[in-house]
Amino acid sequence: MTKAQGSASPQGGHAKNDQTTQGRSPSSANGIGPGFDAGQTASWQTPRANTGPVPSFASRLTLSFVLVAVMTAALLVAVLAIVWESQFQFYTRTNMQNLVTNIANSLSIAYEENGGWTEQTLAAAAAASSQVTDVGIQVLNADSVIVYDDTWATGTDAAPLGTPSVSLAPVDPDSLVRANITDDGVKVGEVRVWAFGSDALLTKSDAAFRQNSYGAIAGAAGAAVVLACVMGVFVSKSLTRPIKKITTTARAINNGDLTARTHLTGDDELGQLGETFDDMATTLEGDLKMEHRLTSDVAHELRTPLMAMLVNVEAMQDGVLPADDEHLALVASEVRRLSRLVDAMLRLSRIENGTTQMNPRATCMAVLVGDIVEAQEQLFEDQGLDLKLLVKAPDSELYCNVDQDTMKQVVVNLLSNAMRYTPEGGHVLVTVGRDGKDVAVSVKDTGIGIAEEDLPRVFSRFWRSDASRERVSGGLGVGLALVKEIVNKHGGFVGVESELGNGTTFTVHIPATREPRHHTGHAQEPSSTIKS
Image (cartoon, rainbow, N blue to C red; front, side, top):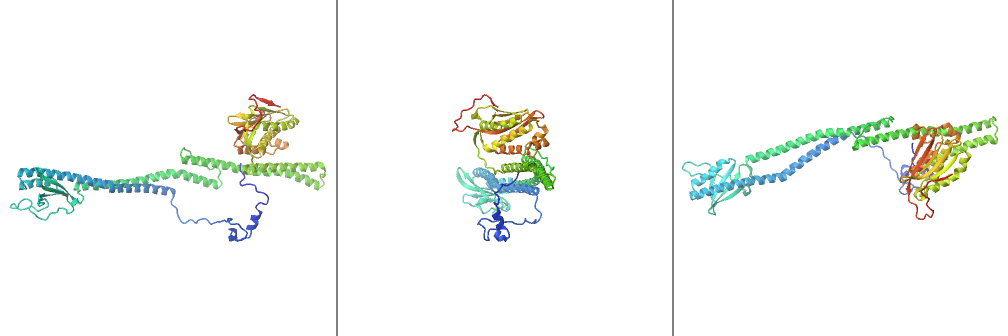
């Protein structure tokens, strides 16, 4: 059912604005010209032109994966450059320090055995130098005079071992490590060790290890980027596939195919989105069909009394029928019927739009329904029907926050519907009681009943299970739709049960509330009470 949008305004309520905006320039229409209050501005612009191809969601998602992988690799390299590199240098310096300590210990032993810096003592340094080819060794005596340097050229047989030449030892003290040579605890010299071709004390094996480590990291980063591309493609496709499906379905619905559905299901967000979209499409299809049917029904309902009036008036004008009270009364009857239809539609529209003023207050439903039943008893008796009221709970448990005027209209509409469809000699029972947290008001008749397939449509506008019977009896087909809207506004719901040929029961459920403290009436006993 399509609901009217907006709200009803008093007659002529917009006349002033309509007159002041006609014939004015754009500047005055924006509130700049005379006759406008400050703040009455408006703006409008043309749609933005398509400036070129826009990257798809899938490509942007894939690019996001790649950027994440690149940033992760860059972060890893930065961490290695700052943390791992310093730790590695500490490791290599520690190894070099252990090496120079071992050489110093060997020279201390040789110094003590040979009684000083003899050729045999320096031979121990040469032996240590031959074991580590990528490390330089330099020995100084107690006076800091270099007595051995394995970077010197080898002397002749006449020349002592380690004849002075040009030394390749680094000048920067941080590029080498030292250890003292002692004899009985007295420093007799010093050993210096450095790595050839490196200011960071890195041997060739250490440098190769570092290079291989960075190569492995670069390879891992490249593999991560490639993997991110592959994952981005698969993930983007899995994400965009349902989105494209929803877009295609929405485009089909926009082009008029109201039967198009995504058929997406699942527990994740995309599955729920697809299910919600399909539910929305189904509701939209039903609303549009109801709108078309409503337009047709309204036209038919208005056409029937209008044609009856037109035929009678033309017949009286042509002299075919006399313009007497009988024929004028017939015209007046159709006018009243048309007026009732328009009033009912207006009330329904106001209820739907929320323009009907509601004044909810704590009301005992047993008292409200009882007053209506008492007022309707004579009318039912004139129709040959038996009307009874059954109260199944104490008054204190039957309070609801309701607008009394509209709730009376609900009960009256249900009673009128029961009277219309119940043949003479039938019974109508009105029951007021509790159903869980709700107060339940039911109207049960012994009328013609409603077919099972028609039950979902009983609250639709202009729907009739027996159109000819209801039209003869004066029904408009709007009463139950009005009942549904009023009950919805009160936070309740209405249900219907029926058996074809055996009667129908309408039950209204309204959330119960507490009895107001100022209420001085006596609570009814829990035992069932029947009023007839």
